Each structure stands twice: as C-alpha cells, then as structure tokens.
Length: 478
Image (cartoon, rainbow, N blue to C red; front, side, top):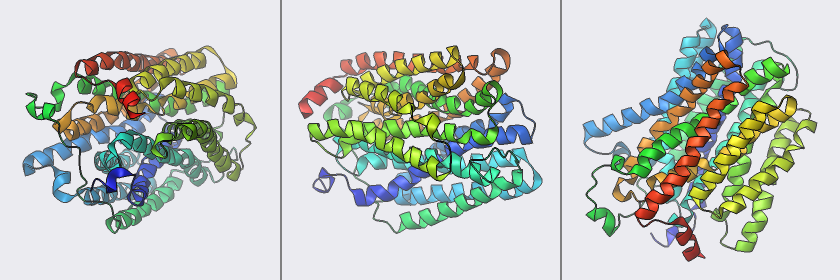
C-alpha cells in the first residue's frame, strides 16, 4: 500500500472531485436564487437570506444525524457502510431534495423551496464528511492539503459556472436585462441537477474508489495521550469557530452582493450573475495557485506554475462569460488584482498559519476599500474577498486537526458541522444591513477576518507547545 501512496492516485481522485464540483455549483447558484425569491415573494433582505440559512444549517443537522447514528450503531457510520457507499448515499439524499423544487415551483411555496435546499444540504453534509479525508488519503500525506486545495479549485469551477447556468435557466438569457422571474422556471435546472446526482452516484459505485482507505496511524505520543476527545484540543475548538466565521464571510460577501449592486449601483438583477461568477472564480483562482505543489516537487516548476495557474483559472472565467455573451471589458482590470494574490501566496512560504494571517489582513483591507469607495471600485474590492478566502479552508482545517492523532476523524466531523456559519453570518449581515445600509453591513465580514487573523497568531503558539512547527516541516522537506 505504501508504494501505491507514493504518488497521487489520479484514477481515483478524478471521479471523487465531481462531488466537490456539485457543492460549488449549488452554493453559488443560491446567490442567484436570493434576489429572485426576494422579489417574487416580497421578502426583506434578512428574510431572503433564509436561502443561505436553510442550505448551510443543514450541514450541522447532517453532522449531528451522522454522529447520532454512529452512537446508536456503536460504530462509525462511514466505517460501517464504506466511503464509496457513503458518497453514493449522500448524492441520493441530495437528489431527493431537488425533487421538492417541482411541487414548490408549481405552488409558489418559499417554505417548500427552502426545504428542498435543506435536504440537498443534508446530502452534501454526508458527502463532505467522506470526501475531505478521502481526498487526503488518495496519495502521499505530505501533499494531502494540496489535494484538498486542488479539489477546492474544482469546487470553484462549479461556483464559477453555476450562477451563469441557473441565471440563464431563470431569465432566459444571461446577457440580457430580462428580469422576468417566473418561479416555475427554477424547477427545471434543479430537476436536471437531481438527475446528475443519481448518475454520478452510480458512476462512483462502479469506480475504483476504496471503501476503506488507509488512514494515518496514530503516533506513540497519541497513544500515550490522556485526552479522550478531540474537543480537549484547543487548536480544534478555536478552529471550529474559525471555520464557522470563514465560511460565514465567504458566503455572506457574495450573497449580499446582489442587493448592494442593485440598490446602490442600479444593476438589473439579471445582469449581476457575471459578478457573482467572478467572486466564486476568485476562489478558483486562489485555489489553483495554492495547489501547484500537488503536481510537482520541482521548485523551479512550482514558481512558474504559481504565475500560470491563477491566470489559467482567470482565463476559464473569461471563456465561460464569453460563451455566455457577456461584455468582458469590465473584467480585464481584475488581472492586476490577481498579482496581489500571487505575492501573498509567495510570502506565506507554504506555512498555513502565516497564509491564514496574511490573507485575513488582505480580506479586511478589501472590505474596508469596498465600504469606503463607490461604483465599480467597490465591486472589485468586494469581489477580491474571494481571492483572499480561497485557501483558508485547507489552512484552518490543517491547523485545527494537527496533533489530534486518533481523534482526527472526530475533529473533522466537528469542523464540517461548523459550515453552518455560511447561513448564519449571511443572515446576520442581511439583518444588519436593514439598520446601517447594505454597504456598511460588510463590517460583519471585517469582524470575521479579524478573528481569523487572531486564530492564525494564537494557533501557532498552541501547536509549537505540542512540538508542531510548520516551518521546520517545510525546511526538512526541502
């Protein structure tokens, strides 16, 4: 088995990342549904964010159900049914959720649509619990976080084209100013999505993905540890809050952007999709940049790829929007902002704590610029938050589970549970916007990034006390 794990198993990894694509497609498509539902059902900005709450709170409920079933069975559910079966089951659950969009659209029921999104999210919760550790297991451990970053890049390919496809399905043309928002037009794309879930579930079942991948063995220190739960490790507990706020600021920045562009800049709802697409493409740009180490150990090649990868991802965004017949002129200037990302990535030197600190400070800077300016400068500033959120998931995930040993899988499930921050922080910003205005409401995101910067500083000291130093690991690796 060790020889098989000396390199990434691309034959198994490629079918796995299809589910990462789906998560991104649906998550970003929600940002198109929010303004549509707001207008169709005459909702406040806070009420419209129930879309985010229903979707992201389902991750927490799904994790609790998973833990409850495991307790009743007195055995870990995934270990019992197998990783491949767990993925397939999660896809089937999500497919069942998409079916609710049909009666919901026919009856014009906002509640039923929220229920459909909730069930889709329940399936995603199970898929996340399986797929994140599986992505790490399909190759050498030292490049596990890079594989997770690469999978995140595929996820953001879904977030880049999701808003455009759903916008086309709802408005009839992504390039027109058409805002004819028949709720019934929502059901077809989601029924097609449900069919895709079922097809991929079947494909995964017949793929070579392992049911029980080899996991990291616990060290002597782990076996001698008196800690009986992952919650006894402060890096995990503080990391749970970090995941909550990270997903929160990532999602709320995008989900409140349509309201800002419509109310302050006069954009038609149907014309906002390419900017939502650019936001999520920004995460893809950053993640492709952060994943280069998964492909090669050659330092010279890595330096070249660090410049090529982000602009290749940016090219994907431009190509997709060209196909959708959007005017690309407003987006070319964004190529200069990507240079800030490349410089920050190089400055981090692969240390997850340093990267988390640098990117959090840049996120705060971008939000303040967005709040202090107007017009397209503010839009680019808010959109660039996607660049600085891009690699934070693997950074926080790596820092939070480092040193947990035999409690790693339990810690991972607690982190997945905290994805609910995407819904709660989005709703909070939407509610706050009703008092201080949509542009000033981005102060919520600033507070989220401020905690992430604190966690980056704090966790370094915690891990060093446990004998874990990422700079030493890196120097030893070279």
